[in-house]
Picture 1 (cartoon, rainbow, N blue to C red):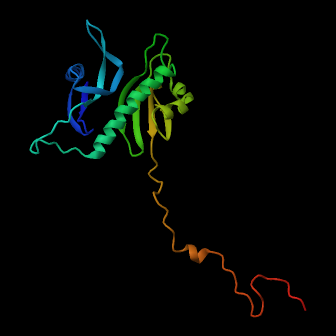
Picture 2 (picture 1 turned 90 degrees about the vertical axis):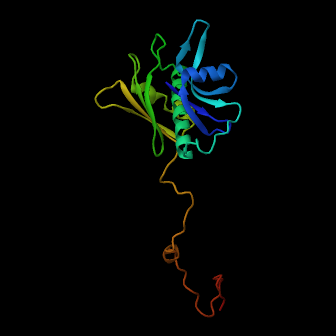
Length: 204
């Protein structure tokens, strides 16, 4: 498993192995932003978190000749994919979406979409897509999303797809008035000469 290293200014710096990331964290040079709770690192001295994203405590200046151009869109999408994976795992633990032995569903893959993220899960024996559908409210709240959708594979029921919806591409940022609005507006006829506009009663 690879770990994304962020500079002190939250810009991507490098991708290293999780062993190198743990060494940076233990040396006090970095802090863990997101981790894989389902696969901790076991050693003779104890148990450690397997970091997915770490943040350096001190800013590292990169020479201009060695700088790797990484777009801001890639960084944001990568961050939300890692966060969505972490939050889905946390939801499965808190909402007890696991087997009787405590085994959580296996998240196979998380990729960005036009509206958010999409995660592919492998359900273990005792868990189904209907269990996630029953906790759809907790799912979208845990992922900081606008909405969430759960889809079961049409052939293999143990494969579940979770769509995290964060934005609606069809929603306009600003309403542009139409020039035809004034043509479709109701027209009030002008009053006859000698008749007041407030239509007061005229005494004879």
